[in-house]
Image 1 (cartoon, rainbow over the protein chains, first blue to last red):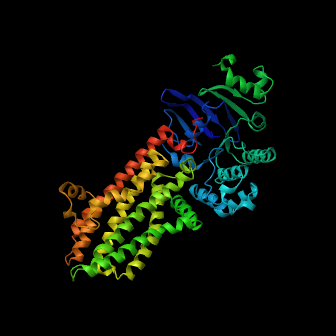
Image 2: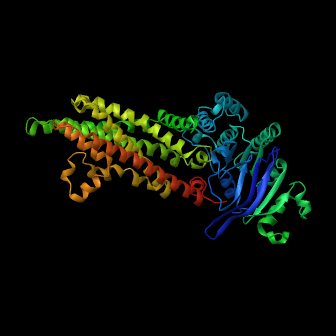
Image 3: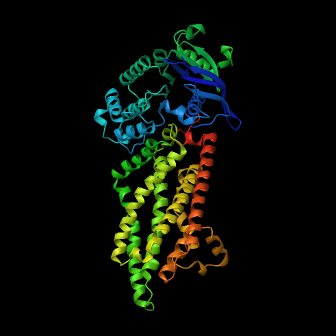
Length: 247
Length: 266
C-alpha cells in the first residue's frame, strides 16, 4: 500500500539557525505517528512544510504519492490539520466555518457531512454560535471537526488536545483512533502529553535541534533506553541528547 | 480553477457581512455622504457660475465614478483583511486553494459589495438630477476601466499588507487619494504641471475622466483613449497579480504565512 506521508532529506534554515536538519520519515496508512521534542525542536516547522505553507530548503514531501512542491493543490486535497495555535475564524459560526472549509476541500454532500461532524464532536448545540465566543476546548473540537471534514488521507494534529479537559481529550483520542482504524488514513501527531502519546501512537519520532534522535514503539522505547517512562526519556532527549549516544 | 473553492471565499464574505451591522454600513454610508455633499455643492455652483454649464454631470458624475473605483479597491482589500484580522492565513493557505481561486474570490466579493455602493450612489445622484444617459453608452467603458484599475490596486494593496504585516493597512486605505491628483477627477489633466501630466498618461482613470469631461462639454470621448486606458488597467492587473504571487512565494520561503498565525517556528 502507498505511504500516506513520505519525507526525504527535509531541511529548513532561518538564516544561521537550522530548524529542520535533513530529516526523513514516513507515515503509513492506519498508522498514528507521534512527532515529539522540546520547544524549538522543529516539529511545527516540519508540519508547516507538510502543509505547504513553508518551503523547504531541501528535501521532498509526498502525500499519498503526490509531491507537495510540484502539485501542491492535489497533495493538500488529501490532507487536513488542527493546531492548538490556529483556531478557526471567531467571527463565523461553527456551521459557517465548516461550510467554508468544506467548500475549500470540495467535500461531496457537504450538508450531510457537516451534520455528521456536529454529532461526532458534540457541537450541535453550538452550531449557530460564533466560534470566538466558544471556550478554548469547544474551539478545539470545532478545529478537529474541520480537520476531519474531507476525511483526509493524512491528518496532521499539532497538540490537538492541549486545551481539552481529560474526559473530552480521551473522547477525542478515541474518536481519532476509530477514524484511523476504520479507514486508511495516517496521522502525524505532536503532543507534550507523554501519557497521551503512549496511549495513541503506534510509533514515535523524537526530534531535537531539527534532527530525529530516536524512533520506535512508545511502549517499548523507555525500557530500551534505560528509562522508566516515556516522559523521562523525553526529558533526557530535551536536556541531554548526547547521553543517548546519538546527538 | 475550482468553482467551489472560489465560492468559499465569496460565501465567507457574505456570512461576515450578513451578520455584521458594522460591515454593512460602510458599503454605502460614506459614498452616500460623498454624493450628498457633492450634490449640494454642484447645485450651488450651478447657481453662481455662468449659465449654460451644468456642474452636475461634470463634478457629481466624476465623484460617483471615483467612489465606484474606491469601492472596488476597498472591496478586495476588505475581503483580504478579514483573513489578516482573524489570523486565518494558515487555515486558508493550507487548503488546496490556488492563488488564482483566492484572487477570484476576492474580486467576486468586491463586485458584490461595490454593487451595493453603486446602487445607493445612483439613487442619490438621481435626486440631484444626474442621469447616466448624459454619458450615453460610454458609461460602460468608463465603469469597466475603473473596475479593472480598482482590482489591480486592491491586489497590489493586499500584497503590501502580506509583505509588511497587519499594521501596514494604514498605507493601503489612502492609495486612491494618492492617485486622485494625477488622474484629474475634478479638473482637466491639462491643468497639471507637465511632470504630473506625464504620470497621468500611465494611470487608466485619467482617460475616463478626460472622456467624461469631453462628453459634458458637448464633444465625444475618444474610444481609442479609453481602449488604451483599458489595456493599461488589464496590464496593471497582471502586474499586481505577479507582485502578489512574488510576495506570497517569498512569504512561503521565509515562513511569514505560518507566522501570521503561529508566532513561533517550532
